[in-house]
Image (tube, rainbow, N blue to C red; front, side, top):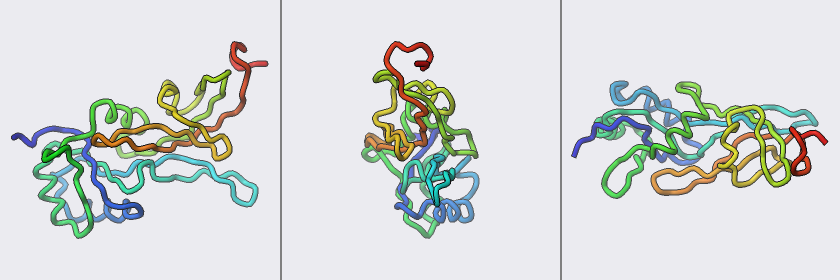
Length: 184
């Protein structure tokens, strides 16, 4: 069984341990074992003292993502990391994210800058239209919108498990169906 399969592998590290575990991997594991280790974040807006602030939050809390070619070597290197790092698998085999989910993650973020930016759009009837941001063209993946918290909820598949992730989205207006370009 060959371990040579380049892809984005997923590590479970426990919520709240993402940054510390990423740092440990970067300092302890051989850099030949991976191309990049990251925890994707998303920009969200929160209101403090009546003022809106943009902050980063974990896209998938408790998980790290590792771009690697030789998963066997990666697994051996992770054994030297003094932290919980569970490489997710399908049965006995360690496999990367599926092509659709890896592509989706690559579309929303860029290598070494793994933050999903804030999006804006409007609602026309029962249809969401994204005008600005990384969710543009991804409207069909939106499952739910919380306009008050300025969040969109999307489904993301990790090793056969479906996770709901949040990303920043502001709906600037709601218009009646069939209204041209959102104008009333």
